[in-house]
Amino acid sequence: MSEKAPVTTTDAGIPVPSDEHSLTVGDSGPILLQDHFLIEKMAQFNRERVPERVVHAKGGGAHGYFEVTEDVSRWTRANFLQRKGTRTPVFVRFSRVAGELGSADTARDPRGFAVKFYTDEGNYDLVGNNTPVFFIRDPSKFSDFIHSQKRLPDSHLRSATMQWDFWSLSPESMHQVMILMSDRGTPYSWRHMNGYGSHTFKWVNAAGEAVWVKYHFKSESGIRNFTDAEAKAMSAEDPDFHIRDLFQHLAGGGEAAWRLEVQIMPLADADGYRFNPFDLTKVWPHKDYPAITIGRMVLNRNPGNYFAEVEQAAFEPSNMVPGVETSPDKMLLGRLFSYPDAHRYRIGANYQQLPINQPRSPIHSYNVDGPMRYRHAGDQPAYAPNSLGGPAADPSRYGESSSHVEGNLVRSPYRLHAEDDDHTQAGMLYRDVMGDVERERLVANLTGHLSEVDVEAVLERSLAYLRQIDGGLGARVAAGLGRGKG
Image 1 (cartoon, rainbow, N blue to C red):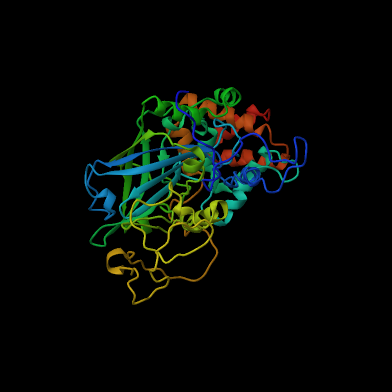
Image 2 (cartoon, rainbow, N blue to C red; image 1 turned 60 degrees about the vertical axis):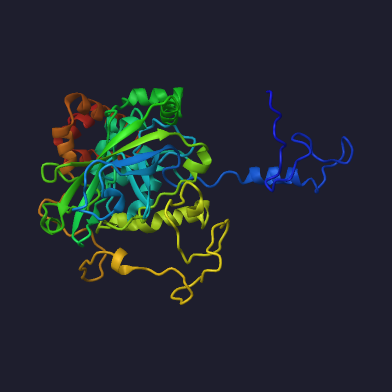
């Protein structure tokens, strides 16, 4: 190297006398407590890992932009969607759901697909998956579901019995289980899969008129999946395959792009629709509500530091800009609390001040203090209301749309619509969407996974679960398990 290296310093900027040797009494004497640089190095090293995410622990991400290609102002007043050609910076994090930080990228699992839009009205976080549905529809079951997919408390091993015990006792999971056990459960890369907002959201325009909306990011690279055997082989060959694929693709000058489509449902349609449109275990058929292309998302830049940008990225469904609001989707409403609460525990109360999470728009908040806070409002009053020049809310400009809600306090499932059930869409996926080869692989994947179930009652209940989806499917899996025609 021709240039002289900079001098090592402490994190306080103080020059360090040695990178290699502790301060001791003589060559072989005891280390001295006053070697503050040694202590700083050890103390920092002991704390350099924050707790991993309870779910979506392992992942990767990239920077890019979202460009509006169609004017949607008739449906929403969200400022970043108003004008064709508008570009908004984004950061996207992809992840596995159940796997830990050291797990293999290509293992069978749903994939997280979280998008942070840095809009001029604050951050908008769209936190979804690579599937349009989920396993459950009520947040009270979420921790139970995740526990069933993680590890046994005694042996610390994953358990197919535990997974199928939960699924077969939760019939609403049928649709997502069918997707998970198909080749879509083992995507080839993050670039070759779709992303979905999954939930139903409300869009409100400048006149206060509202519609229901669903988001679909369609991969411009096309859908490509591993077979079960290929995914397992890649888990052994390169457990970081997805992270490596995206990083090397972007580092080589490539881009990863998705077309954003939305489905729009008039507000009045929801109450009388043939099934509950806010049920996260169901999709809206495109023949009822066709997909409308409104934009394009492009990723073109890798993070400069994985920990700072990917590991500390904090997405939360509660980050909604004016013109986007919640729906009666129970899972969405539960996530509004769960996500920011998890971030406060994992990376600290002031996680939104980290550069990757910090909005690009001005911040005028009455929140103060807490660990690691470095942005503050100076001599601004720390309370509201005040008469000393502090910020003031503007409900006339940013207030929520009006909704009428009434009823008794109950703990119950959604009110049933005419065609509400848990097996119809799962069966249609098997019979009408999948081709012959896809059905063959699904049967093989189900048979292989169920062969690991070691409790007879759980296995029998799981086969009954599959027969409810489709009698032929149940019979084929039962035959594969040596149980005749099931």
